[in-house]
Image (cartoon, rainbow, N blue to C red; front, top):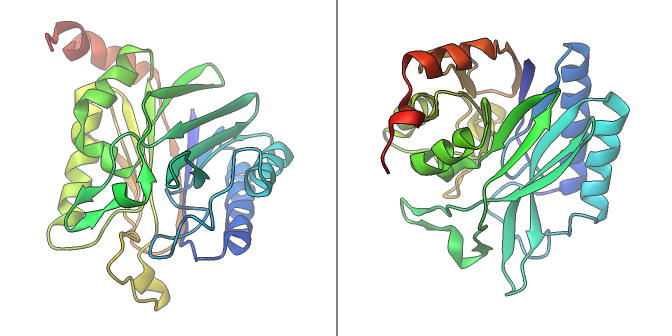
Length: 262
């Protein structure tokens, strides 16, 4: 399976960000990718009011993502915001294209490091997987990385690959935690974990502010925790070839899913 991670730098303008998604999808298609993953908050960067930005999954922003995916004939996963019934929004992944149509609402909200995502974002309730060219792909988002149970649940339900769009908060030790958590979740699930972060705003001369706006360093980790490939802090496209047979071999060698008791 060939997967592309489009490490973009979203702005507060959803229309501008659609252009980034179109460009990234076109590049991924040219690279022969089966799946292209964009970061959390691809629709609109954090640090602005999300309520006025949110749209339903049948709204114009999501419909444009569907059209982009259809034009390229590959599957696109991207972060957006959809309205919740209580006045908050959901932090949603849309997955669309090449026979896929699904969405995932982020389960674990980022109420940590002085940030309170739950003030404006409602939590999702159920894990979601999709099938891309016969491969089961689990969906997770950013802070979900700190909760191994979700990754083991996705793997136990058949996922060989788990994609993690993110907008990782900067700060002391956060880059080290990012690398460690992606690799640890790959080990927990004996799956490929492919994490696509927002690029670091500083690489474009933008002030990141206090919101979690990304540090870059998108990476793919193999089912035994090794780094398959990783890019730097600036916007870019990472293309990785994933040998799904490695997942089967890892699960025979280190059967943590079969052996776990809790």
